[in-house]
Length: 459
Image 1: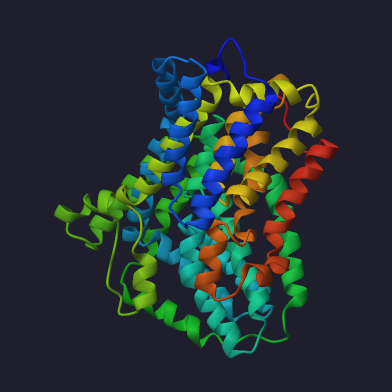
Image 2 (image 1 turned 90 degrees about the vertical axis):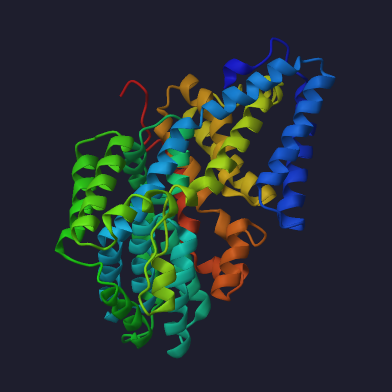
């Protein structure tokens, strides 16, 4: 987007004031008025457009900036639609249910907090949704902890950690696709590169949860009902593993994300049709409307009702609006002006990584919105990574390490408010125990300071 900058930049102080006003508007609307983020972003578009007109920038130029900004997200939009299709087809083929059932089978082991973390991580990767994972399996694990008189704060910390491990690492996750698409990095290259910080964060978190776990196994009778509900659905069979295996093969062979998601979706749909889960005449409508089935278990029925292109429209519309706002920021010279002021100080890999992480964290804290922390930070910093010879997958990794997983730690954020309400545990209570979310930004900053695992453009 830096190609959109005008010939004359505003003063850095003036640009900073506009940025602060926009952040204040978005923060007040999301945190104070509890509006969906679309409305304050649209209001911000109006505000920045008015600023551009006052600076005598032709409206056609401003409009072109918005269009160019939105165009950068078309790749993400296409992947989001494919993700919706993949989730619904994997539900119908039994692929996601067998992954869930495998996770529940681990629940009878000791180390309750560590197993809770592991189960929610597996299901988080399977679903690609931290909200759904926390609202279903997370609530169940809290129920087990309460019945066994275990710490609800630590259990909630384990649930949040596992759910956001999945939100960060799943190819089905919207934030994972968003981070890779915004900075133009292949989805699976992005996921593999995140392992350098994610695996250590996972291992450290698992060890701490294991050390904190009470001796002996918890009573998992509450989770048994989940397994019974999955079995009663009739979705699980040996062929349910096929789409998952295909995805792994395509990932290892470095196939493009679009092709991988498309082939696995078609394979899963054909498997669902062969097992007569849904009549052939209705099967393809699941791609748009999503999958649902009655299992006799309300929680399981709710957990399996997911996917479809229609279910991704909220995210798609948010991404388009946010990128249009980003285009305006560059067209009016607001972001280029600030970058021009500070780029002399960002002349090394460590300074760029540190600044990226702090910016993503700062947007999360000030706005409480993880999408914007990824979108705005990604758009602002990608050219600085190019100038410092850093591969852009370093940027996409930092966006997730300091953007995606920070949001549930902010009490007034979208994720924080949702999780506190669903789990019945305040953000400040589970925050000290959300180890994975705490370790991820620390590790990504350490990586930047030491230069370890960083990839350069010519390597």
